Image 1 (tube, helix red, strand yellow):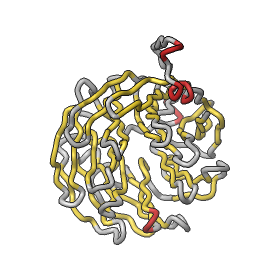
Image 2 (cartoon, one colour):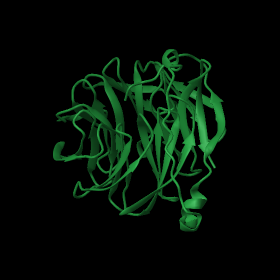
Image 3 (tube, one colour):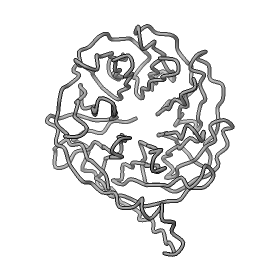
Image 4 (cartoon, one colour):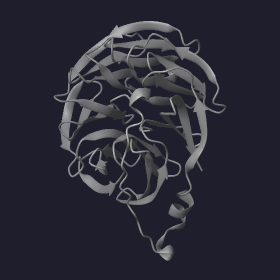
Amino acid sequence: MKKYSHSNLFRRIALSPVVFAFGFALVSPSIAAAKGFSITKKIPVPGQGSWDYLAVDDGARRLYVSHGTQVEVLDVDSGAIVGKIQNTPGVHGIAIAPELGRGFVSDGQSSAVTIFDLKTLKTIAEVPVGKKPDAIIYDPATSRVFAFNGDSSSATAIEAGTGKVAGTVDLGGGPEYAVADGSGYIYNNLEDASVVLKINARSLKVEQRWPTAPCASPSSIAMDRPNRRLFIGCRSKVMAVMNADTGIVVATLPIGDHVDATAFDPDSRLIFNSNGEGTITVIHEDSPEKYSTVETVKTLPKAKTMALDPKTHQLFLSTAESGQFEVLVVSK
């Protein structure tokens, strides 16, 4: 995931409006009730520097925000800054293992993963991985952390409890974001090849390589685990819905330009795609086979990375406005 910096924020972005016409009588009550998201709060964060992923620890009520060479830690409910994880050069992503009391940060510049204590935010260890680790996720089924190395076309698996490297997965292409299904499998986008990989998190082998066509350049992914559906955001302005067991694309829907994050809320059955043009495309899962576009929410240019709080159903996005780095809160 390419990071955004304050200096390149003000590039003019031309938006191509997409108009969806719905007959009033045909709009289901559930879809109509899902509308109405907007920016409800802006949380200023001091300092300069680029930004990338955010992560919510809903149990501890903390929001982790990548920012330059450190991670800002905010109280999810108040927005107050409660701490920092420092010395994470080229930080991209944050993964949380709450049952182990540990967090993990991918440090793109040092090609390492920083392990930190969730309570004290102090660094426990630094683990060398492949070149320029970007996306990072925790798999609770195997208690392993997977760092996806952009310049090595690989993923490094780390035993979360010990910090030892369990092995390396050769991906055969440039990885973007990934998601764990909770049963021992990882699904990862290869943006340059327009495929999704199904990775066995125990054997560290790629078992399937599924094309995402007509969705090209996949960069984000989320999952409805009970219904075994992957939601894949593509830079071709399409979100694809893929069967996680067969690799069949069961639906595609239009989304905004330069998508970089996708989130699924299992309570509302809403899928959110945050787009660098300054929008969020909201889609409703009517059934595992049927999906409907709900609305396009206006945010700010470059607000393309996003995290969902499953408790409050709020969305958090990073961007900068008038030179001020900030976290946007989007809710109803």
